[in-house]
Amino acid sequence: MSNHLVSVDAGNGGTNAVRRMKRGKDKYTYFPSVRAAASGDSLGIGDLELDYEFYDWNAHRFVVGDDIVHVTRRAVERHHGEDRYGGEFHQFLAAVALHRLGIKDGQVDITLFAPPGMYKAGRERILENFGNDGEVRIAGRDGKEMCWQYDRVEVLPEGVGAALCFAIDANGDMVNHDALAGDVLIFDLGMYTGDALLLKNGKFSPEDLQHATWDNAGLASHVLNPILAQLKKMSADYAVTTIDDVDLALRVGLKTGDYIVRSGGTAVDIKPMLEKLTARYAGWLMNNIISGVFNGLRGIKSLIIVGGGAMFVMDAFQNEYNKAGDRDKILDPREHPLTLDLHPVDMNAVGGLRFGLMKQRACE
Image 1 (tube, rainbow, N blue to C red):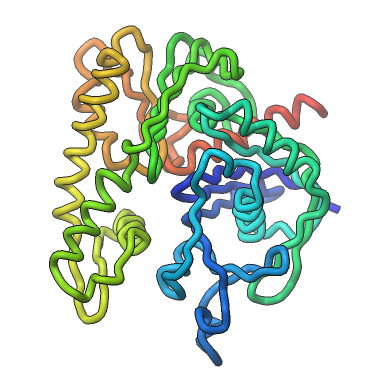
Image 2: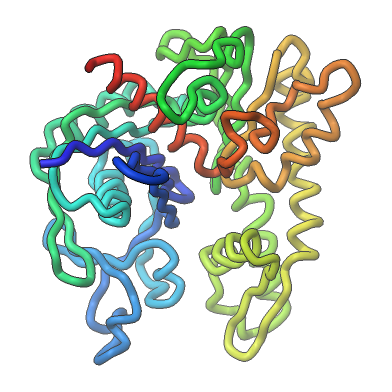
């Protein structure tokens, strides 16, 4: 029986997970935090069924993530709501992530996350439901059932994992104590929400957390939904297009440079819309949150921006706040030795893995 170390950041937009491999590089996976029940109608017939991944979980079959766009647009479930952390959907997303990371059996040490605003209650639910879950079973399209048990469960506030990446190296060693000294603001820009978490000298116990959450500060409100509205005005071909199609086009575009949304016989390059909207999004964040709530970062040593929105606003924040004499105000993972190879979307999960490794080694 193997002991596996993993970290799973299951947010309301996407699920990021990373596994420490015994040999070679860490293994990553990402998929949108959506699912739909898979019926014979939704999966198609004959060979078509084999084109899409699905998972058998608790006597039900589900299509997950990007396959939603290709298979079904009906009765899509999203990982929303204050009580979602530790619940059945959260457990399902973690199980899918571990399945995709290749865990077939054994004991699992897992680090999970809860939003700062509901951290205390969320942590209790996660520890109770994951810790007492017994044997976890899930099967993929090949029908082979994978099963494991959670041996150790750690829960961190969302955003803290990203901050830890600047202090803990890939071996789980604390090598940069100064990174979290003083007041450090973590700005986690997700699909539907924006979270700000203020750390004071690295403390993140429930009593020490200073946080705020804005329901309308995510990518969906400021970028994806406005693009979707424009597409629907352009052509009747986009009547059935959803936010999931736009989200997929953005993620493909980040990798390839081609930001194309297709429907029917129509294809639209959304890059011009994206550039205009993300510039406005960065300005909105600076005016309403950074200036309006955090006094233009006065008195704050550094700001760490993570989440799906980070790559779209990072340069604008750098240009605005990294001025002469204060060039390290915005901690850019692209320029820091401990985070050079990390994508902002992955940093929460990676920090959780490094934290788990540090704790694991301390117990040896």
